[in-house]
Length: 555
Image (spheres, helix red, strand yellow):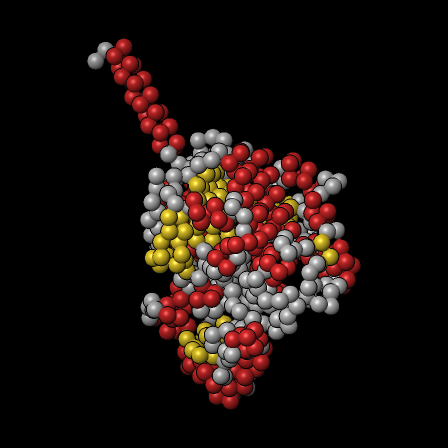
């Protein structure tokens, strides 16, 4: 072959390869938008359906793919592990985020899942940005997208909670933004960037910041109160009081609450109050749209990722409980936020050019007093401190005086292993004695030893869920399982933590791009979301992912 023919052949081959590459990249969404709604029970969509508009949740359900039997495959069910699991495609047993706060045996103290004093706050002079994902022991969807694009894809996360921004961001995000409660700024960590982009600084330093206007506003109902038929009456004993109020009733004046709230005034966390109102979700939507605009997301051949976490729903659930008008109104307004975000994506990225997945980091229990009063179901509020005292007495009586319990919350019991070793005791024997003490208390239905989880494999029931969360380095020595609807919480509002369906059943929705409308009742877990998105993008799964993708029909 002469030189001329060789050059022509090379050009043709190069053109063919470029054409194939262009076709390959065009067959991907330009942007992946992950939405996690904090403490969203599965039935909220159907329960509040008649109160929703056409362009939010209804659009995701009617025009998207609805996984109706979406479950968490581990327990405990809380925010940090939830966000880590959705984006890493695996459970705490592998990604190591076993709780929001957990006992670190090496440090011999309780630690927060994203605290990292090696890094500094960017965007504020507070310490609220000293965070990183270094405890996340595997890669996640964000990391794999960065590698797949040779670091040309953009990854940005937004939430009012730090852990809800940091854990989805992975280890190489362009930025993870969360709210500084002291000054209302959007901040990040020097783990990601050394200074804020100019557009974020402009938002923080604007004279008429939306967040400051919201701090002067009222939370009022979206609909006439008689239309809130999916909820209890407005004034019930199952709800907490908003600062400055003597009844848990609408409307709620945020301005008056700021003046009346002595606790936040003392800590200097003035803007923290916005988190428990629908405006907390509004500022997240506004920031997410600013990211799309200013980071030019979806404007090249490399798929970008925007992770959005709506957390105000969690604050409302904790304060008022799942039967409250407050929670229903929170979701009516969230429906509008999602519609706003979808419309913005249609305008800036293009209809059918992006894919959305929506799920929750956990669901939530019913208020214990509500269960007793309205359902005739035996349920109680327990106190971990009292349970710890009972277990300590039992261990002292069995093994001699000393402080055996290093930490205990809601049945998550850590023993002081150094003390036990010094006394010459066998760890498993102390675990057994602690488990027996758990079972002597009527509020517990099961107790599972860490040693059993180390040497056995469980796949069914509560044992299977706890096994999937068990990390030998960071998990408790004994797992005490509370009875159904027994919660380690105060009398008002609710919480989440358990292996019961009311805490594990969450929505899983996919919308946009080439996704056909449809639904499935087949069982799926939140750890299947990441590999599903990876399959859409033709790239590797996260390193700890042992789940398979959901078989979603594509156009």
